[in-house]
Image (cartoon, rainbow, N blue to C red):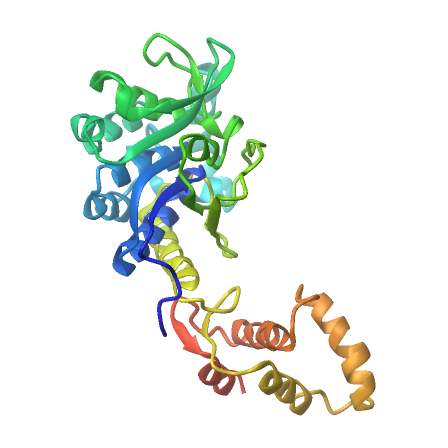
Length: 356
């Protein structure tokens, strides 16, 4: 397995919003760091802004430690509700016996018009070094929405007074479920309402090689023309990263591992969607495998190639790809049925042996 990514360049990194799924971005950062990828600018929205602050501080160990040990009570006030019940609520796994405990909490949230996020304020101030951000060699941009001024904002954090930095980070991450409170004298909303993946700020300020880290989210993507000389490398996942408000160490650690492997897929040119596969076989090898493994009830070879395989490709969302990709789609399907571990690198030959 050889590095396929150009580490001679210096990149700008855009981090999408996605609440508790943000641990994924730290896993990506870890893989980039191990590969020697350099960066001099970061932009972030919502949880991407909080992660971006840690990237601008160049403090990967702190970021890993924060997410590995995160707890819902660090983000929102659960009152008398325990973390296990809160997790079951998010995942729709509550029993009838749980509702008497939940009702007073639900009434309190409704009366106070949202979740109490004073713990998040304290957590951000304990983690973020405002002076370090202010003087960082990394240009750091965040997106948010000023409800008071009724407009979206792109904020260059390095230019803010130190005592305003934490408030603006919170402003970018102000989820609609949070109780609306003033930050620096104004009301703000989550930056995902105007720019979920903040590429615009980076392009606007002249960055040409950008890594975009995507999270499954419901935010709005800002539409603008990307110049021809801007190169964007996207790192995304096909995995389920969990609930946007499930700030548990269990989900965070799993999402970090997925982010780490998804980044390695890009860095090392690995194949696959659910698995991470180091390619050594040719398309001709794949075609031979497909022919050798057609069902006993299959018709003629021509019918198999012209009818059955195209239908299979469509069912597996591999239409328009070559025989190698179709083979991998079938192999990954078999691997999932056999519950083969996903978060490791397989050679294609080894994975073929395992599923057979």
